[in-house]
Image 1 (cartoon, rainbow, N blue to C red):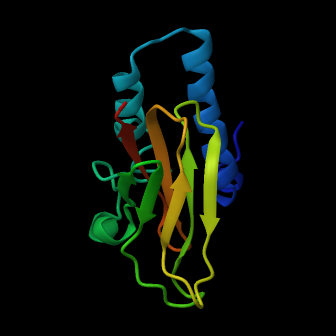
Image 2: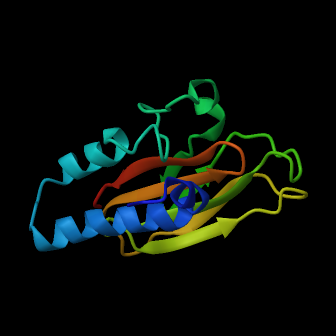
Length: 152
C-alpha cells in the first residue's frame, strides 16, 4: 500500500519517477504518438493534483499567471521566466528544471530568493522535438509547461 503522506513529502522524487514511467512507456511500447504524450502530461490524471498546468491548475486557479513558466526560444537558448514576486524565503520560486523529450535533465537553475528573480537561460543546442519545463514554488508546488522546438 502506498503511503500518501510520504508521496506528498517527496513530490520531487515522485515527479521524476512519474516522468521515468512515461519514458519507459515511450521506449518499450514504441508509441510514436508524441502529441498524445504531450496531452497526457498537460491534462492527465496527475495534472491538477500532483503538479499543475495551465489547463489543470487544480485548486490553484488564482495563481496560474504568476506560477506557470513563460518560455521563449532564441537561437540555441531557452529563456524561462516565472512572473512571481520573490518574497525572500517566505514565498518564492525555488528553481526551474528543463527536461528533454525523454525526461533527461538538460539543466536546472536554483534561485536565491534574497537576491534573484526567477529568470533562467538554458543551452538547448542539439535538442529537437519538445522540452518539458518545470517551475517550482515553495508554496504552490510544481508547474509544468511544454515547448516544441522547431527544426531549422
